[in-house]
Amino acid sequence: MTPGCLIATFLVIGIIFVPFGLFCLQTSNHVAEINRRYDVECVPNAYRGNKQAYIKDSAISKNCTLEVKVLDHMRAPIYVYYELENFYQNHRRYVKSRSDKQLRFGAKYTGESCSPVQWDHNGFPIVPCGLIAWSLFNDTYDFTQGSKEIKVNRKNISWNSDREHKFGKNVFPSNFQNGSFIGGGKLDPTVPLSEQEDLIVWMRTSALPKFRKLYGVIEEDLEVDETINILIRNNYNTYTFSGKKSIVLSTANWLGGKNDFLGYAYIVTGSMSIFMSILFALIHVKCPRPQGDTNCLSWNRKNSNN
Image 1 (spheres, rainbow, N blue to C red):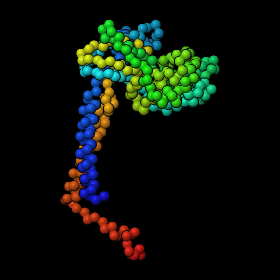
Image 2 (spheres, rainbow, N blue to C red):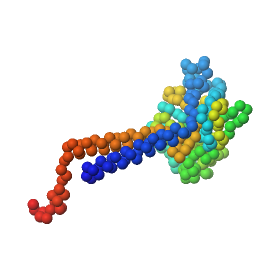
Image 3 (spheres, helix red, strand yellow):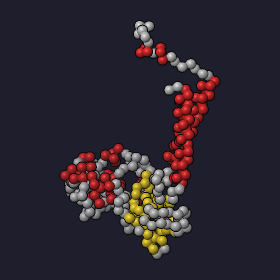
Image 4 (spheres, helix red, strand yellow):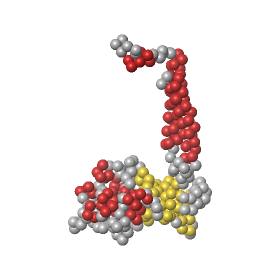
C-alpha cells in the first residue's frame, strides 16, 4: 500500500459512501409513519397517580379510543406494530427461560431451562413454558374510519421458518396462565403453536430495550387528512417497570421501514474517509517520506548472511 494508493482508496470510499448515505436518508424520509404513545393516555384520570391499581383491577374497563390523523398518503401494505420501551428482553435469565424442544415436540421436553415457569400448581407441565411465553403481549387494536371498519390481516406476521421448523403443528397450549400469577396474554388451547402467530412473533426476543413487533397488516390505502379511530384494549402491564407502549402504523420500501441510522452511518463513514484522504495527502506533500527498499527484505537478499 503506497501513499498514493491509500489516499485514492479513502477518497473513492468517501465519494461512494456520502451520496449513497444521502440517498438512504431520502428513501427513509419517503416512508409514511404514525407513532402514538398510549400507555398514559389510556389510563383514566382517577388512576393517573396509581396506574398499577388500574391495570391490575379486572373490574375496570381497559378499553380506550384514540384518534389519529393521516398526514401523508399511506400506500398498502401498511404495517401495524406495537412498540415497547424499557423492556429488557435481552436479560440473560429471561432469554434462557424457554424450551425450544418443548415448542417443537411437546410437554415431555419441559425442563429446568424454563424456570421459574415450567409447572403449574398441580405439578403439570406448562406449554409453552418459560418467562418469555408467560409475558406474552396482549394489548389488542381495532381500526375504524367513521362507520367503516378497517380490517387488519393477522396472518403471516411471523417468519415462515419459525412456523415450519420451530413450533410444532401437533403441540397445543396446556395449563398456560392458569395460576393466580398471570403474566400476559392467554392462548387458545385448541390451536397448535405453529398457528399461534402472536406467540411466535413475541418469542423472537429483541436485543434492545426499545423494540417493535409486528401486530398485523392493513391492506388498503389511507389518504391524507383522513381520521382513524383506534380502539385499544390496554391489558398489558408496563407500569410496574416504568415501560412505555406505543402503536405504530408504517409503510415500507426497498430499504425497510423509517430508519435514518443507515443513511447517517454511510455519511459519517464517507466523510471521515474523505477527511483522512485529504490529511494523508497533505502529510505526503509537505513531509514526504522515502519508501522502503524491498530488496533489503531478508527473503529478497542474494546473500542471506548479509
